[in-house]
Figure 1: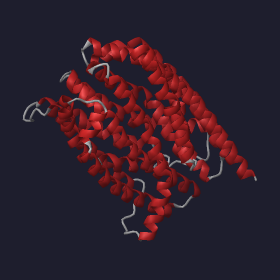
Figure 2: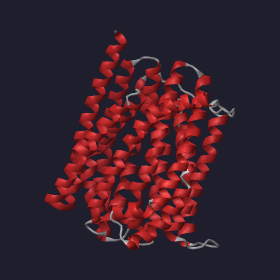
Figure 3: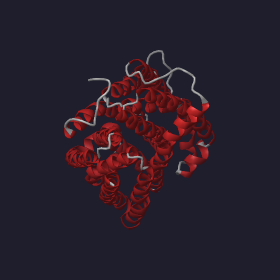
Figure 4: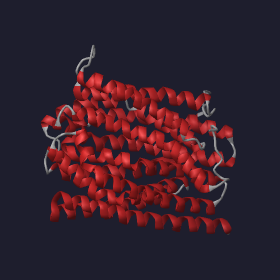
Length: 450
């Protein structure tokens, strides 16, 4: 596979599928990373698994900042690639990573200072707080190794290459798989560190991606410049990235906030319910991996075609993406309906935890195809340099639909009602997202014609 791919020409479906398959390797690897952690921590017990489940919304917030910066970087770079200016591509890429370093410092300071109050707000008791601190204190040290590789990988994807970033991501999975059992259970000469060991393994594994991603970006793609930029050039680059990046961060914050509300609601049903939710969301991430890959590919596809002013091609790509998401969603619904219980018991032998997992997957998986549609639409808005449209759509999805429907469902029918509310909100959100994207593309195409 060539380091760069021109997405403004050639068969749309073939290009999207080829890039999605390359992206899926890394996406599955990223999800496998979390599943491996969940499996080994689950062997420690329900309390430890519940403690790690509490960290999920907070880690999603940190990842949201990285994703927002990555989306801003990808949107700006893909459009510049579409216009054919390689020198400008190198400047934007290098300056974007400097911006990432600045954000990393801020995230680490805020993270260390807010561990106790944030997790108390999420419903963790004092026993859980002790375990959570052991995990998050180490995890925050590794924030640079989360943010910078994510931005670097997005820059490579903007160039139309999804395979190499996926290989970069898989390197961390291999390291984490080896280190997790050694550090969690104290095998051989390694000390038994339990939950803290999982965090240390994560940080070391992410460090691997940090090194490999920068090497690939420099020597394979020639997208890094080591010259010291002038301050005015740096600020100009940051403005372009943050024009997309800040709204994208806000947009990425919306799911963790809503997930935090759901976590708080589920906490009222006991630690087994929280543990079940933690297992469910990680299985869900695996199931949504192909749709997430497809949505990520749509950033590069849409951005390059925007640079070439090919709006009809963007619309055809969106329609193809939607059909593919629905097919994938139906497949995972069937698989999880048939094999939900054995999958749940694989992660934790507690029957109560397993019953929560089965309940969640049997209801919410109905909507997985629609979640894919909404994710692709959100990515396309960022690539179209319409970040506030993405925010608007996600606010409607999460706060007009998800939270009210989840609260209503929980009030009338407990956990089954809560999960049903989530499912219905995802279905409605997909319809609204797709409608708004087509309306936006129609206006942009009309503006070009005039």
